[in-house]
Image 1: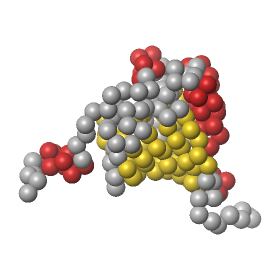
Image 2 (image 1 turned 135 degrees about the horizontal axis):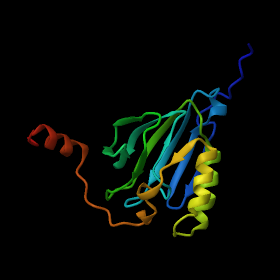
Image 3 (image 1 turned 90 degrees about the vertical axis):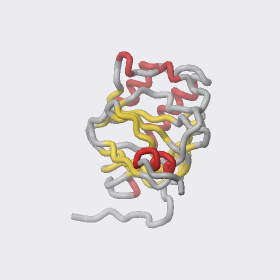
Image 4 (image 1 turned 90 degrees about the horizontal axis):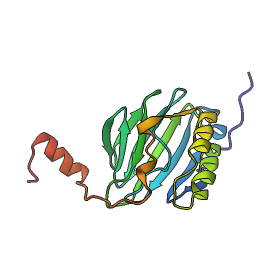
Length: 188
């Protein structure tokens, strides 16, 4: 078996895709990793959510690592805040979505294993989301794009088009403050 030659350089796939107010910056794609993984940063301004429905994927895991701010993920109905230095693995088949309910912009590293999705999905989604010019994207077109790229959108009330792209952010406690609340520790 012949092994494919990989272009060894930092951020070989360096491409930023804007989905409304969100940005997805691809660092590594399946073409750069022999299909083993895709890695990208997602930047979510304060009070924003991705203008696409909650979804699942059966062919890959999605692992999130918090870099800046706090992103709130809902995975199979459970709300999970991911802040700087925290990780979350979303298993295959889990219904999930995310947003930034905080007052700071959020940024996370997303790793897809294996690399079953890449920049093309985000380019196609961006075309639909950006064409809506701040309104709601075409639901049928988004579902078609998602299906073609191995994502299964939810239906009915879980298709939250009422997310509206700008909400008033709520003050958030820091990860340290949340830990103190959970463990009952004092700040001293």
